[in-house]
Amino acid sequence: QVQLVESGGGSVQAGGSLRLSCVASGYTFWNKYVAWFRQSPGKEREGVAAIQSGRGSTYSADSVKGRFTISRDNAKNTVYLQMNSLKSEDTGMYYCAAASAIGLPSPLRSISYNYWGQGTQVTVSS
Image (cartoon, rainbow, N blue to C red; front, top):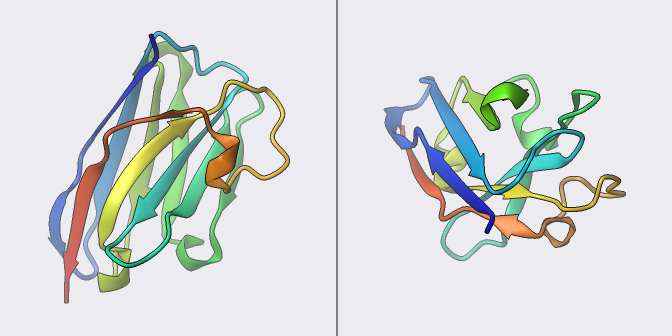
């Protein structure tokens, strides 16, 4: 059974930083896509960043480029999201997602992912 567990969320002032972690069990990250999504009340779930864990290729939404960095530690079956220069609009529930397919045409689309974590809340106050 695949389980994704996120951690690292919290409350921070604008301009601050947080580092989210996603640990997987029952699933091997190697050569698969793993992504971070976020959702705030009244808004659709948005793909924030994704990584192809074999090649290390990364993808980011325009809204977070230059501020957020996704990385992985395959040995620990863990993916991270380093978030710097946080803004109030970054507030939301952040979810880790993992795909069972090796190739994904759209790494930032939620439909591409089979497994989801429960989420970790990020709140940025201005």
